[in-house]
Image: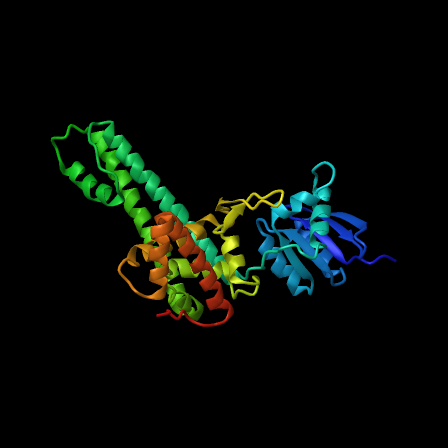
Length: 339
């Protein structure tokens, strides 16, 4: 009797589809499961390889299946697409996942624990609140412009000038618009309080975790970048080398080579855009402060800035930060500045 060795699981909110394959890759079982049936099904299965796309809820199900003894692989969805045969449906998707998992060179996503997901959720909430605050600030400036009151750009300007506008009785604003503007200003202050709360939580996380403190020894790493980097990279065991981390962040050149001719373009911009932006911002601060310094890192940055320009020097530093961050986590060490 054929034995199931690999299962492709197509995740969903309520209805899941399973395709079981034997050691030769032949499909020997197809099954549709309701959400409440998933754990019972896998509890009755012999220990095998379970493959899923790295999508919403994948890390939760991966942890649950690992508790049952199964080996779990999370595969990026873009890598699964090439193995899809026939028309797109849930069973074909599950079969493509199972086939992709059988490839020995397939790159998988490390399963995140609950703490890593907590920190990533914290970062996502903080990021969304910052976007909302920026949108509200721009909207208030735009509404004031309709009444002939032009405010310069900048969040600090909006915070400072709106109370003055409300107190000025001679600017021609109606009583109704003054009430609306005051309510919008209250919303802006409330968003500031939410952002302060999220930032404090991230700072507390960084203070409580020794790995984040070691990451902050790297130039350009602050508590926010360190907490996100640690939640994404973990202990570094999911990556073979530091360059793999920088590549996963999209900080390596995009290649378009053919016929033996090597063509390197701009950075790939793959992976987590938010993490990449934090690394870029941190690197920009390092490059700016490198002017006039004589240590080895600053000399390298100053030479690169003179030869290739400021922006390329910033990206190069962000790439180096990602590689150094991996080394700090993987080898359990701290940054040692070279003279």
